[in-house]
Length: 244
Image: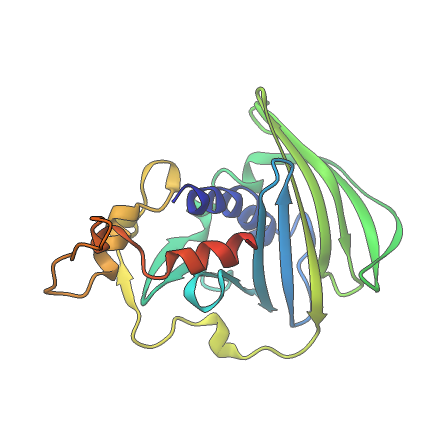
C-alpha cells in the first residue's frame, strides 16, 4: 500500500495543480491522447494513460485493474474511480495547496526543441509560496497547440526537496469520446470524508469495505491473510502504475 500512497502524493502535489491551473503550463487547445511516464529522483516511475478534451482530463493508472482520475474543470470537480466505486472531490479543495498558494515570479520562453519527434517551445518557470515557506522551478516543453510534452520540475519546502520529470509518448491528436470523461454506469459513489484519511490520502480500510460484496464476510487465504484485507487485483494495479 505504500506504493499506492506515494502515487497519490505525486498526483496531488504535482499533477493536479499543474493540470487545473492555466498559469503553468498552458492548457492544451486540442483533443489528444498519450502515454505518460513520470519519474522522481528517488527512482520511482509512474506510468499512466492520458486523455484530454476542452476543460476535461482523464488519467488511467495501472491499466484496466487500476485507478482512474477524471478532472472536470467545467464542473469544478475531480472523480477518482477504483473498482466499481468513485469519489467526488471539489477542485478548489484538492488544489488548495497547489498553484493558488504560489506567486509566479518568472516565466519565459528559452528556445525551441524537438521532443520524441515533436516540435516544442521550451519555457522556464519559477514560483514562490505566498507565505515564503517554499518554492518550485524548472522547465516545460509545449507544442504550438499547448500540449505539455515534457516537464522537469524541482520543488523545495524547508529542508525537503523533490524533483519530478514527466514525458509524453505515443501522442495522438484526435477527437476524444465524451464517455471517457463521465462516471461509468453502475458505479457507486462513496463519501469523500470517510474514504480520505490523514493528509488527503485514501483510507484503505474504507476502500476495502466498499469493494467487499455486500452480505459476505471476509474469507481467509491460505497464508492466513484475510481476503477482506486486500484490494481486488491490487498487484496488477501497482505493477501497471509503477511500470514494474
